[in-house]
Image 1 (cartoon, rainbow, N blue to C red):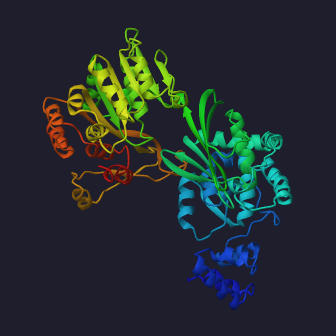
Image 2 (image 1 turned 135 degrees about the vertical axis):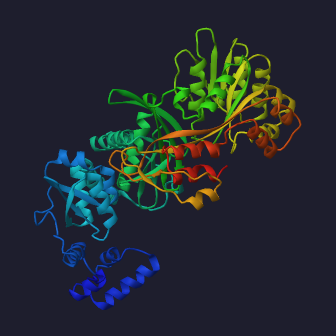
Image 3 (image 1 turned 180 degrees about the horizontal axis):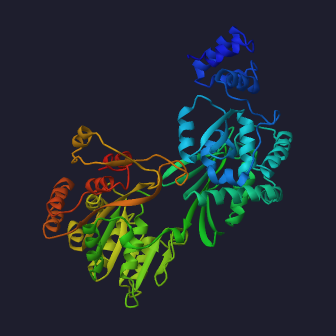
Length: 572
């Protein structure tokens, strides 16, 4: 049976005219919007009329609060069965559970993929109802505890904003006249406090590393970064953004009245018996302050070199270089690739009462017992280079420098390594051996590099497949062989379940390129040979490339081929 399009159904039922449909279709062609939303916006039809028409078209019962079908039963069971993120993303709400049947209200009856995923996710047969999006959102607020007070706060603050709003000019284009007492009072209101607490709690429970709150002209964006990927979340109302940001600034001991300059702060929360560090950064934009909260859980990071994801030969080379009494170990990779965690793990492997370890970092990510850690403060002159010079008068055995950014720091690192210290640091390059021309570009002499550099490594992070829902498949042989890989099977790919919040991945694991310098590579560095020739020498010495190290994880089913290709082949 071929169903008529919704526009034709509405015309047939006399809800809209042909002329109104043609006008709406013309608007849709220009804007790419959804036809139903265009009809509602132009007052050609109401949300209820469109949903009822869909109900009749698909033979599904229409559920609303008015007819008594949109009612939640056994909220605890429903919350346990269906993740909030899945429900809100797909605009659906569970209603009841009866034996092996789940009652669910949806807004889009044609989204069969979501229905299939919902059935797989819950393991239940579905009894489907149609409902309007706003009412579904209200039911989700009631089910997951998001609105209650938040909805009331929105109503009150929206009225106040409507009365007092005199201009739509962006914040930075008008004279700043913020009433500090009013800002602090709004940020301290119960509803705002509860909403901020809930955002932080949800981010921690979903294993997010960052919370992004971003104001735009008409809306506020709320996003969580989970396993390196940003995911949109149901945002607060635009009028709630200033008090939310002010609340977080108060917790971080930042200047609430200052909205024109970037600020950095931090605070600590306790979540399920563990302490979580939250690093806060604000930046002024044309529509208000953008705020990012970095979430650092000490319990979430296991500082063990055996747990990092290195292949056995790579771990052996790292431990060998770390056992040297002096030398320079450099780790490369983009921001957020886990370099600091790896360096911390190396420090833990050599830490003892006989070893004096000192670090200079920006910022100090995690505090390690027994290690002297210093945070840079450029505003008072405490730079990497200044701290490193001071360290050399502190009788250190091992020095960790957070990053080599300039010639002065680079030369101090190489000279410290030459004078009997083990030095660990990081550089921003695309691969391990590119660190050598980078040092040359900074101005370090080739003889210093070749005589002090012990090991150079690079790393990236790959998302790890959820073991509860990953599915096996046979990869395309010609595709793999075209990439230069040996065919093997089975491979595994992401599917999605409630354990992984529908993403198909849980956590990340590092892949490495580790090159221990030897008698072939050192003379080549001294002779200024190209990176290409250095890579050939490293391959001849048995060093495993990042490309091959990542492919091993794909073959073992630790990650998917798609994730591997998105992270590795584009950069190696």
